[in-house]
Amino acid sequence: MRYKFLALLLMAATINSCGAGSSQNAKAQDETKVLIKTNLGDITIKLYNETPQHRDNFIKLVQEHYYDSVLFHRVIRDFMVQAGDPDSKNAEKYAQLGTGGPGYTIPAEFVYPQYFHKRGALSAARQGDQVNPERNSSGSQFYIVTGKKYSKFQLQDLEEQLDKQQGQTIFNLLCGQNIDKIREIQASGDQDSLMRLQDELVAKTEQMLKEQGPFKFTKEQVEAYTSQGGTPFLDNQYTVFGEVIDGMKVVEKIESAGTDTYDRPRKDISIITMEIIK
Image 1 (cartoon, rainbow, N blue to C red):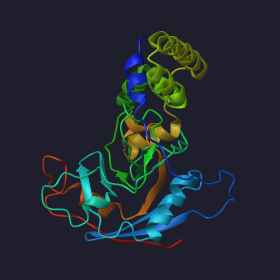
Image 2 (image 1 turned 180 degrees about the horizontal axis):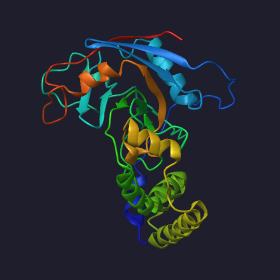
Image 3 (image 1 turned 60 degrees about the horizontal axis):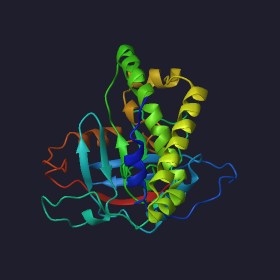
Image 4 (image 1 turned 180 degrees about the vertical axis):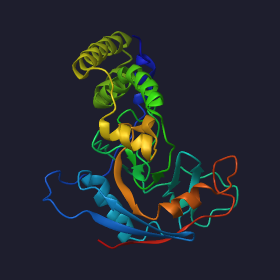
């Protein structure tokens, strides 16, 4: 199997990651609930304690009223609705949105397969693997999964596809873990050392593939994706840090909005405010 090794090594050198972390050893506590008031109705979400950095950052932004007046700037039927770009506040019609944020990212917190992209999942948006192999999350942008239902046969086909992609996924993560070394070698212009590092990451990738075995969805995932729906192809690639517990009908209204060529609703759908309700 051959991956996009050298290209990813070169592109990985452009990564910038920042953002403060929080303790993984916090005492167990009740899950925090947040009320999202929109101009189409209310949505209530809960935040998972197992993703503490995403939880704490989201709570901080809510308390700072960061999300007040932002738009659902990207809406795709049978997929998801996305918000959290501060540049969307009072944005002109037809303005292309989706690049704004607080100026930092959050390290990925995959709690997989416990938390996955079922319908109603709350997940963090992020830049693509090409420039973000560590899959760090946006500091503010998030999406709510709508997705679609899958048959068991469709999930089996998807398992085969995802199994083939596992090698590239592992390699991307290894690139991120070795970013300082990659930068140092690139700065020296030593192509031989770069190729040797590539070979080392190839070997590690193949070993990890052998250890983890073929990709399979859990029984819980199969049940959710066949009965409720979701976006299983995003699992273990974007951090799922909460879920909708009330207001999916409002999410459906947002999802059904007419959109322009950038997937932005033609009529603005805004978050009026958010508040912690616990």
